[in-house]
Length: 113
Length: 452
Image (cartoon, rainbow over all chains, first blue to last red):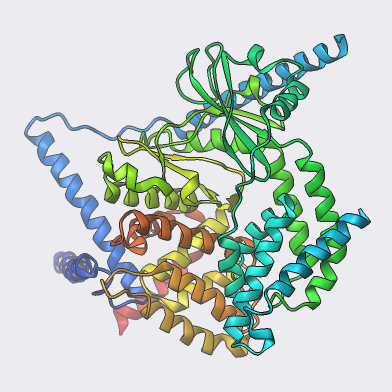
């Protein structure tokens, strides 16, 4: 059983290591593959995506290190998009009401003249 | 109506006959003939007024349907007409509000700011503070731009469209287009113009644009004063700065043209790939820049909309260009309604591959216009019908590239699109519906790899 577990973790580690090497190579290709360098085709997209994820990872790493040093990290806070959308719709509705009210005033003026 | 019909025919005939010498009386080279007659059509459209000027603008964004010479000529169409006297504009305002401009605004300037085929723009100032749909209150005294539809323009345009529709079949037989359906084109045109004639539609889009870019202080649009707006009068914030057509003046005032080019292109990508609604009439006169590098978008008369599915497919096509993947371009173009006949798939794929590899300029940047317009042409050669939205979007992206390169010649718009397309497609991988659909195939592929 012990052997099996050890083999299991060994297999997991090997897979992880191989995948990691593959990912590192993809990140490198994605980083270096500017407009001229990239070979093109479906694999190029995977490389580009890997490079972008690696950038995000570096950012996360920097944030974690800063927090470990006790520094305050500015976390990107975004207000709830649904709430924002609702606020916009209310604003839009108000705009329409302003518009209709103005139209009504015009009609009253016209009918009064 | 009959006399207008005769006048239209007479003006077109006069311009075409006048083009004969330039066309070598039919003996010149094909390009020379096409260019001469395209110019004649453009001049005739300018003579014929608003409806035809707008029709010319529609032709200018359809390189898939019309010959290159005609498209290029229509792009240079001048939509600047002599201004109307202020009394005529004041009369429209009186009809719309039953009040004098001075009762509506703190000040109203009789001198027009601009005059085009459909509308004329005047300056004014806000009489009392107004809370717009989004953003801070506009205080009393805020500078305003008042866009007023020219009197009679709507009726004249609609009457001309009716006549043009009657003439449409004959125009179709004159072989000015490759394979377009003139009646369908005019119907599309009528819808576009109807939207443009109701200025409230433009106002709503401007408000939406302001909301979409609420997190980006460097991209703005004029906010609308709704109590002073009707279908024929649009009251909006006055934007100060320089039009892109005056970029040399802006440069002299220290505007960072590289930052502007990148930010302007990015803002457009965001409209297309993130929101699926975009300004489809971008040209240097519709963009303003300010000394602090803010870009103001103006004139939302022609806009494009994409459904969530179309947006994703367009993103895939753009990713195909970024990563030079012809298979991806064809697969997702088909989902957008670009259907290549099975017997033509191989040559179209080969042609597309050549286009993707040939998009590089000598300076190493990529030429989107070369790819986009070349792709439309390639599809045309194989008789592939192109959905109007697809053609409009490619044309819009090519225009954005042109504008960005006018600001900063070394900009690579394809490279600008890379983070957008990659991130959007990356995020789409986490969509539960997509995961459910793709996971079995992904697991099979992983197992195949492991047992290989």
